[in-house]
Image (tube, rainbow, N blue to C red; front, side, top):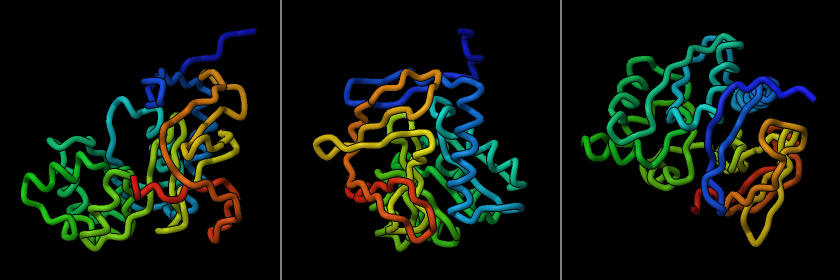
Length: 225
């Protein structure tokens, strides 16, 4: 059996410690298709300006979204998910009049607070804000209604609208719950061993069809983390 062509390597957190996250070229194609389905559920399309906030170590999670955005003719910008680069998130969101800012984390909110930014003023004018679990509470307190964006082991969970729950694409990932925490395994052959991986992310699993039309499992209660 030939060795799959490697696209890249990232990392993800698990209860057993950091796990290397190899991505083959075929995995990347599949992940980009999953990202496109998430973007469809968010109604992000041609001409929309989108700011993705992330780290280099998160490329395996985020770059499929970069490619899916470019493929549909959206306009992509990026900022680092660090306190030091937080003012750039505020500046780009304002100057570019973005349709969406996604993957905002607590570190960015810390940086904005340290620089005297008002979170409601920064994110309130943005039609769609995707926030990680450690940022949700503060954004809601500032009057912003974010959707959930969470890295759950090797998977990315993206909410279609506030309160609906964050979808994990079950074309790629098998999702289960163990003692109240999410367990993820690869559904098809990937460069990453199939698992399962105990993510340590605590959430309730909802398997009924979402109002957006997707039937993928949804994670509820992530904002309480």
